[in-house]
Image (cartoon, rainbow, N blue to C red; front, side, top):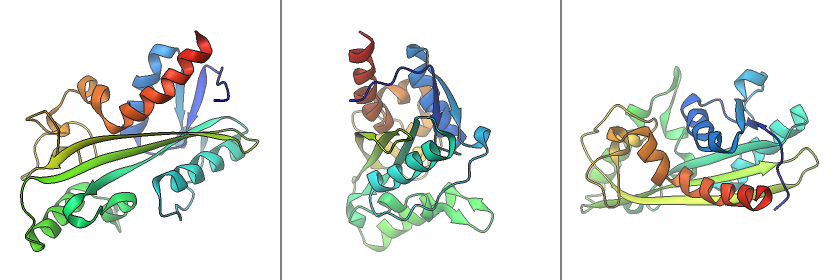
Length: 205
C-alpha cells in the first residue's frame, strides 16, 4: 500500500453520520477528518454498478478537485430474498423529491420481501468499500461486510440509514438500538477500516 502519512484526511461524503463514524475510527491514529461539504465539493454522479466503482468515482473526484488524498466509502445493504437488492442502489431506494427518506426505504424493502413471500429469517448483509485516492490517480481499496437479518417493525433511534431494521449476526438488537461504539466495532465499515488501519499501523510501526 502507498503510505498515507498526513494528519488530515478528506472524506468524500456529504453524509454526516458516515463522516462521524469514520472520524471516530481514525481518531486513535491522530487523523483529523474533514468532509466534502466543508470543502464545498459537489456530489459526483454515481454511475457505476458496483460499490468499488462508485467509491472510486467519489474518491478520485474529491482528490482531483482539492489536490489532497481523499477517502470515500460506498456501502449498502444486500437482501438475499431480493437477489441482493437494493445493494449498490441502497441510497436510491431512499430518494424523494425532498431528499432521502430511509424510513420509506426500509418500508419499501420489507414490503418487497412480503410480496415475495420470503421465509424468515430474512438474511441480509451490509457491505462497505473504502477507496483511498491520490491526486495522481493512484488508489487503494479495502472491503468489508457484516452478516445479519432484517427485522420488522424497525427498532431503535441510533445510527442512520437501514440500521433500525438490521440485526447483526450473534446479537438480539438492531444497529439502531446499539451503542455507537459497539456498532463501530463490528460493522461492515469497521471491517473495511480494520484492513485500512492495519495498513496504517504497518506504515507507522
